[in-house]
Amino acid sequence: MLDGKVAIITGASSGIGAALAVQLSREGAAVILAARRKERIEKLAGEISGGGFTALPVQADVTRRPDAEMLLRTAIERYGRLDILVNNAGRGHFASVEETTDEMIRSMFELNVYSLWYTTRPALVQMKKQGSGHIINIASLAGKLGYPFNSAYVAAKHACVGFTHALRMELLETGIHATVVCPAGVLTDWAGATEGGSMLPFFSESGPLIRKIAAERQIALPSIEGAISADQVAGQIVKCIYAPVAELYTHRGSAEFVRLAAEDRAQAENHQLPVFLGERIAYERLKGS
Image 1 (cartoon, rainbow, N blue to C red):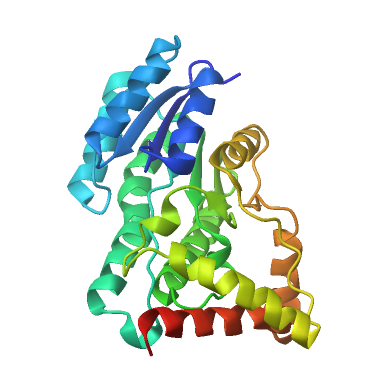
Image 2: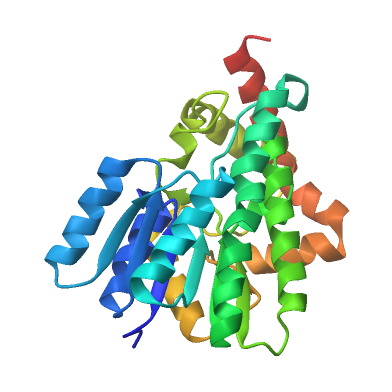
C-alpha cells in the first residue's frame, strides 16, 4: 500500500519508533531510521532489510539543527522524495517543580520541542514541491492533561500539541497532513530512562496508594486503558497514515477523558485526585522528604 513512499522516523532505535519502522517497511515504504544510538538502528535496519524490505540507518541527534538537516538531506538525496516524517524522538523527566533544574528544562524542550522545527522546516520544503506529505508528531496524554513530578515534560508535550495545531492551519489545502499522537502508557523503556532517575520505583510505589485512596474516598478513577505495546500504537499510526486525523488517541477512554477535562477541568481533576495524592506520597517517600 505504501510502495514508493519514503518515511523518516526519529527516535527509531527502540519503542514506538522501532515498531513503526518495521510496520511501515512491511507496508512497502522505504524507512530512514534516525537515532543517536548507531548500533541499534544498524541492527534494526539489518533485520528489516533481511526481511526483504528497505531501511536506511542514519545516526543523528535531532536536538542539533545541523544533524536534523543532514538527516532530511540524506533521505531526499537517496530516495528523491519524502512522504512521511514521524517526529518520535523524546524523553521524560522525573522531578517536582522546585527540584526541576534549568538543565532539565532545557533538555526537555531541546528534544521534545526544538527538534520539531529542525526536522519539519526542511521536510516542508520537499513536501511542498511534491504537493503531498504527512508530518506525525508523537506527543502524549501529558500534552493534553497535567501530571505531577514531570512538569517540564508535560509543558514540552503541550508545546508539541500546539505546534501541530498551528502547523495544520498553515497546511490547509496543500495536500500535506499533520497529526499529533497522544498515547497514554506504552510498554517501552521510557519510564526507566527519564532524567532525574527512573520512574519505575515511583510507579510501583504509587500504584497501591492510588487504589487505596480511591477506595477510601469512593472516587472513580479515569477509565483510560492501561499500558499497551509499542506495536499496538504503531499499528494505529499506520492506520492514521491511510486515513489522516488531527489528533490520534491510542488508548481506549483517553479521548473521552481529554474532552471532559476541556469541558470541566475541576471534575476531571477530581477523578484524578487519588492519582495525584498517591503519587505525592510516593514521591516524598522515594525522595526521603
